[in-house]
Length: 278
Image (tube, rainbow, N blue to C red; front, side, top):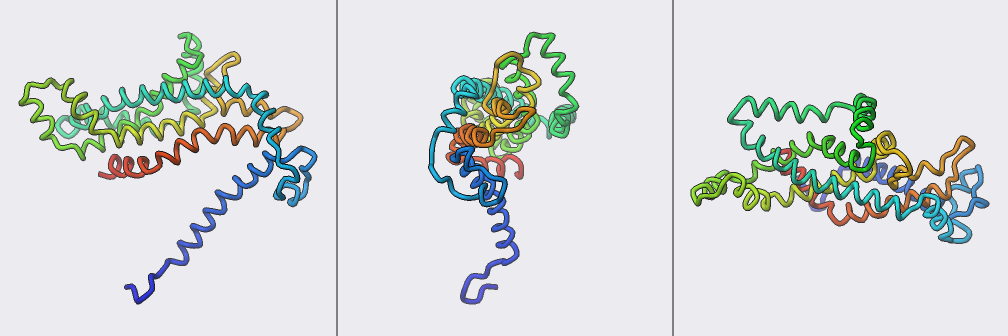
């Protein structure tokens, strides 16, 4: 009951404030250390948390040279965009077939449950077999990484697409069938355009996971092929870590995907709600 003024849940508010602090504090430290010079870094708390005496972009410039930033950025963009494109096309097709058929046929329902169960298989179990298989097949490169990502995100994306089909009435497909459209035409002309909110959600979630992943490119790709997250390992040696350059590089790698997420965050909430809950 509300009496005059709107009431607030104090416990939840405190938890939200604490959660905000746990997010902003590491981000503050990252920004401060990235702009500081090594001479300003001391072992006490004040040396880490204080503002830089002289704001400079020299750390960012040197970090770009050490990580071969533009080449690594190109690799990350290629892997991420290719994975998004394949995921939207392939996973939406599979989600459509299984989503429309699993209620009518137990076999399709079993296939759906089998694919979705793949979300519970950790990558550590698959790592060694995948390394050997991709090496023998000549896929120890960016193409192999893209194919693996497409398979990795199949369970989650299939579940989202199949769930989102509950929002699309069967009458649309029945009307198209009456007009003489084939199943293939119905999908591409009617179903696929009407799943734009879910396409956006799948694109964002796939991009976030692909862009930030380190383990898959590390164990699969060979040679000097680096992605932006993988290039951060250049700052760690057996003798220590150059934190100023490392944190500057972290910010450079974070900015593209952060901007992409901020622009499209509304699609994540609406798409996941429609695809997973209904």
